[in-house]
Length: 190
Image 1: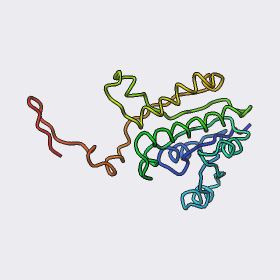
Image 2 (image 1 turned 60 degrees about the vertical axis):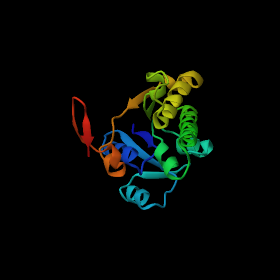
Image 3 (image 1 turned 180 degrees about the vertical axis):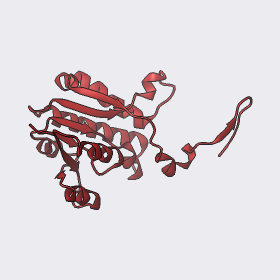
Image 4 (image 1 turned 90 degrees about the vertical axis):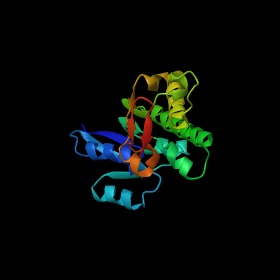
């Protein structure tokens, strides 16, 4: 029996990477979830024979429909997208938390679901006892806690994935590019 994995963010870096691996994995069929099935990236997936389904992370019902009959869901959200649209750091986090919970609830509603893969990060605020607040990490971690407390049956099927920093981020955020530093009264320069 062929199983279906739904991948959110299927036209982005992380979701696209999952699609590229899973499309060649025996026994699995990919359902690429995108808000814009008419985009060039979505059309390319469709041309490769991948099922492309429209759903909006703001619309839980559209996600439920997109997840019908799936055995696994790969869920990723994007705090940065909201920030680049002009929202502030906390507002971007609130939107990301809403998206994360909409995806989680939609997945939990599927009787066929066997595995939920949630791309997340640890909360800097919690790890460093409030000393460091990092919204793009903290709000994802809020979703972790809420899945565990509000959706315990889903939590039992969930793998919480913690990925490292993407090297391509250095192209978008030059301040995070490697710099040359000396120890002992450190002097740093790019």
